[in-house]
Image (cartoon, rainbow over all chains, first blue to last red; front, side):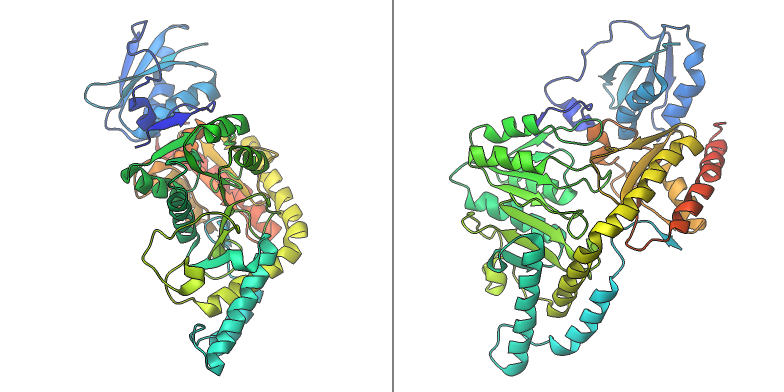
Amino acid sequence: MWRRRTGGGARRSPEAAREAEPAAPARPAEPPALTIDALGRKCPIPIIMLAERINQVATGGVVAVLADDPAAFTDVPAWCRLKSHEHVGSYELPQGGWSIHVRRNY
Amino acid sequence: MAYLDAASTEPLHPAARDALLTAIDAGWADPARLYGTARRAQMLLERARAEVAELLGARPDEVSFTTSGTQAVHLGVLGTLAGRRRAGTRLVASAVEHSSVLHAGEVHERAGGEVELVGVSRTGRVDAGRFAEAVARPGTALACLQTANHEVGTLQPVEEAALACREAGVPLLVDAAQSAGRVPLPGAWSVLTASAHKWGGPAGVGVLAVRKGVRWRSPLPEDERERRRVPGFENVPAIVAAAAALRARAEEAEAEGRRLSALVERIRAEVPRLVPDVEVVGDPDLRLPHLVTFSCLYVEGEALLTELDKAGFAVSSGSSCTASTLRPSHVLEAMGVLTHGNVRVSLPRGVPEDDVDRFLAVLPDIVRRIRSSLGVH
């Protein structure tokens, strides 16, 4: 929709992320220890699934949340900030949506 | 019902009601005509214009009445861009402007123009330095900045933006919809827009003020009304009522603002204490006096509004499931804060303190019940 977006500490919107500059490297550096399929589920369900299952990976491990509700793109990183986990990156899926990677910090 | 959605629309001020009823009888005729009843309508219209101009810090001949705040923004943005076509085609705005600014920007883009949105901090405040850099880039025709955000209440650095605009020779459109009648307005605008129903006037009246010397050309077909800026027959009784409400609000604003701000402070402090996993968003200090927004983790915004409505509370939400577009609020997205489980509480003039007490009393159990229905305990 918008050609240019500048500045701000906040994360980009899904539209901005689809623009030329990626929000994160195109590929994750580390394979996830657990993948949660929340495709087709509306927020807050993807966040609830993440909160329920993050303890299934060891501390320091990465969980991938697959989601296509645009709210998840903002809400998963916001959840990480509130819960002191790490948002590693959000990677576009070929079929639409994102694989949003979260590292369990504690 | 406890009405806590003043940011959507403020209930009609008693002064506006009285003025409206009088003006319906006295100001119905066509103010552009030359007979007695028409001259009377014209006198009422011009008196209202002078009053609104004075209260908003403008000259009467700079003020035109539109049919809404949204129309004022559309005409303000597109008219100034048209007037500045030779200077450039870039529109700069914050990423958290009202949708009327963003939609006018889309029209501009479709016509070949360029739009640059300046991001905001986690609290929703635009960085004045980045805004200044964007404005200073060559080819900028217009910059837009709201006085305060309509969803989270954060005040914007309008004075700094105005300074940067003056240095770059770029006009600044200030959208004062959420501030007019509540807090003092900045004076350093080129174009100012506002909406009467947000300050307790009737719906159907917006204000478009264009400073003398600012180039502006109507994006719409020619019409004689409102200094050729707004087409169509003015709603004189509603405009008279809007002016009466603004006058009354100006007199009350300081004391009532302090009272509402203390109530908002209480909500900001109490909600995170009473409800687990809540994020209060927006700037805690640089904010409107009457508005507070928070998001509850693991809660659907729509379910929250429905339950609050059943409990007798009218509030609104920026969550996607409550929007017709099914998209989360662009404001919350730009801030990078939780978009689900979002509640905006905005206090109308005269709200009883008891409404806030009761809201704080019912909220924790409502959130707990919704979470438990989703299996979150």
